Image (cartoon, rainbow, N blue to C red; front, top):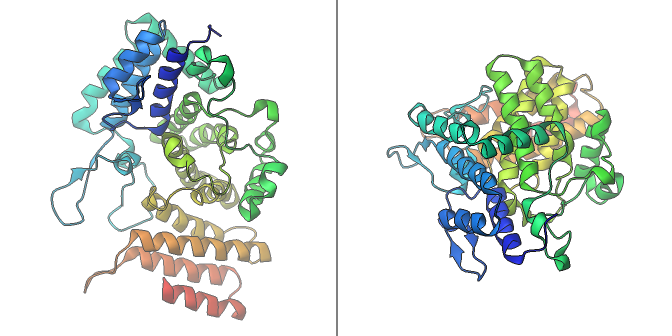
Length: 399
């Protein structure tokens, strides 16, 4: 660690915070040492000035911002006007509605840089892997660390004043019996789900990772790695990449009431959601229903702490998949299965309400039809019990 340096610590922490928020479109994402807001360009200038020797880190940050904004795509207007890119955090989230049909499982354009922007993206990659050896080495080392080793300490820790030791980005919680005991069914469900996967369960205290930009990069790297394997039609390799990120994802499982952490960690949640979303889909295609349910259950646990406006169309797709997967599970018809089915249907109905509108005359709401069909399929898979008939009728009517 270098000697304490309050200004260097301030600007390193400000930059880390902007990166972790994914504040790519903010005009003034950080504050200077006196508390005045400053733009991205000034943020990078101040960082380079007060954190000498870390120019490569700033270059990586600049190009990360560039690549993130290049993913923005025009979206259809609800008023029927021309499609426009949403220059908002929700626009950066990426949440394509598949023309009213929730059950589209391929990698949609939201994950791909548009054709007319690919040359700019290529230049950003050249800046990361080109002739500048410092940037090249930093990028290569960073990828190596985030894929194969532990997540590195935040850069701000190098300059941390002695009075603030260990104040940077403490983890929300880590998976353990103690930390999940007061989380009700959601916490115990997550513990049960992951306890079946060996080393993922009960992450030792010494291995719990503080929340840093490096953690976001780790999960993003695994997610992009998995999606790349998907593009090559290698489902097994994609699942292996997604599954490798689960131990780190688990360590950031929020406690109830920690809603204030969402915006501060928005870029983390973007990649956690995308990874679990893709993992659930690929597992459902290439593996057994019970394998897919592992990812779907973890996804369901995390959705409970995300705002309702965060990727609702993704949720609609996965809840449709969740219901269909439960219908072919080996445990169908058991009391535990029936309880889970009711819980999932209840959650799916809430998502349905936020992603659909009442159809005009002559139109068909395919999402509502899929939901109703799914509820009926669950009832049939559960043995068509008379005691469930009234519940099915009530849910279908309200859906």
